[in-house]
Image 1 (cartoon, helix red, strand yellow):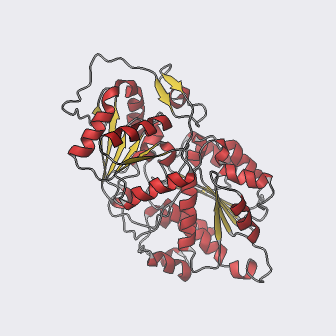
Image 2 (cartoon, one colour):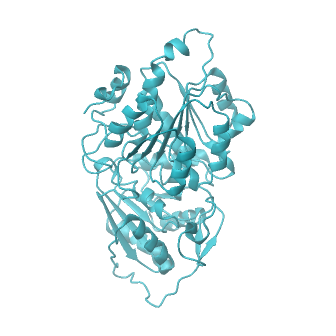
Image 3 (cartoon, helix red, strand yellow):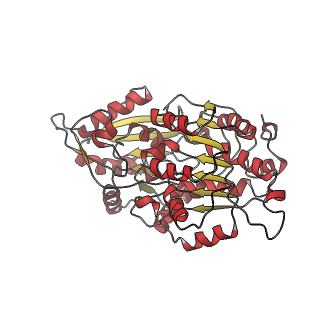
Amino acid sequence: MSFSKLGLSDAIVRAVTEHGYTVPTPIQTQAIPAVLYGGDLLAGAQTGTGKTAGFTLPILNRLSTDAIGAALSSKTSTRSVRALILTPTRELAAQVEESVRVYGKYTQLNSAVIFGGVGINPQIKQLKHGVDILVATPGRLLDHMEQRTVDLSKVEILILDEADRMLDMGFIRDIKKVLAALPAKRQNLLFSATFSEEIKALADGLLNKPAMIEVARRNSTVEVIAQKIHPVDRDKKHPMLSHLIKSNKWTQVLVFTRTKHGANKLVEQLGADGIGAMAIHGNKSQSARTKALSEFKDGALQVLVATDIAARGIDIDQLPHVVNYDLPNIPEDYVHRIGRTGRAGATGEAVSLVCVDEHDMLKDIEKLIKQTLPRQIIAGFEPDPTARAQPVQLRSGAPGHGGRGGRSGGGQVVKVGGGGGRAPAKPRSASGGGGGTAGARGPRPAAPHRSGGRGR
């Protein structure tokens, strides 16, 4: 199967081919014809399987067929937003818009990305000049809607990307406000890494007789990722992490913490051990987040410490190691975290440092992914068998997550403040394989984030 056989125009196939992609991934093979057909779509695929290109390629194709005659027929014509892509985080928004530009370079369509954490005036200026495809986080989009600096009355296609993450971050009210401003007649595409009951409820209210695609087993983890658990006492996690990095000579490690304070503290501790590290989370400025992510992708930074703000936005080919310094309180987030490695058929390793406080969280994760993860005790870091569990501090920003997201566990969780967000991706060649297994390789563009306060 080739991209041209999926019904894409020569201009789009040319752009895809220039970036090294020749064979579509399974999600692209199914989603592209469905979107080109014009109906609504509910699509689920594991992270790292080329989901972004699965919708950017066909919407570029659809809009470009009459873009010259409609939007560019005269030099004085004003472009209107014809496709709206909503993402949960800044990093993801930037990544998706980068993909739109990359794949649409030989069309006459233009695009823009708007998200919080940066000045709004340059965005207003860009919108005033006219935009065909707009990528936005919900909060900043509402800011523009309130200031009447964006017109959504001519939107033909709506895409909700990472819809499960948007619901988790509490965006449902913002999304409903946006939906109310859109034309009733439009094509709706809902992409999600997982299909929860909440996602199905959203789909029921948004989609009209949708085609449904689910490439990977529900909430499954990529098979090429080697997963293991290192039991350890809570106060020995930092020394163990330093030991693992140094003894294994890890050169590029993505580490997840549960809170922003925990991320900052760990960066300081690793620095004192002579290990270069930077943090990325909702309290960091957009420029600081961009710098840390860029240096990590380039290999100049050994360790990137992140909260779940980055769990769905970091797209790095051949990222070898992901460490859960803290287990996530939401089991699905485990899938997204470890999905940063083992992407597009590459192998990867996901290590979780688990103390007695997190045993219930681990049970929830293993129940979700339907497997028992192997335990390996590291010599010199044997956990105290008499240790008793203490309350766990949770990241904030996710409503209804008392007691670990309302799942199991009662009474052992203390909810504290916080927030989250995410980043971009780019294309490559794909061949065979299913849902991220070996051999699958295909366009996979980028992504950014939003932090609290509606992403302003």
